[in-house]
Image 1: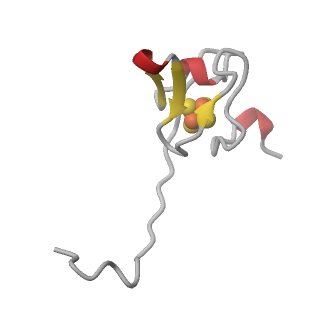
Image 2: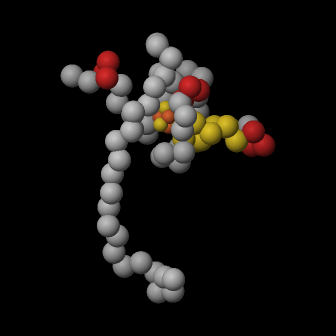
Length: 71
Ligand code: SF4
């Protein structure tokens, strides 16, 4: 279909609500956190980041802005 590659892209964006258990806004509870069992690691399915501390915090490249953090 793209034998000669793609020379230009059209860009789109989405805004999606993500819900965490109260006080637990960390990767562990995010629907976009994938546990790669065989490799013993977690990966963000949005950014592609391998998550170093999925049970402690959100990823360093996490795009989620919590309503409680907005000002
Ligand atoms: S980095 Fe953010 S979007 Fe990605 S899995 Fe963690 S909480 Fe979810």
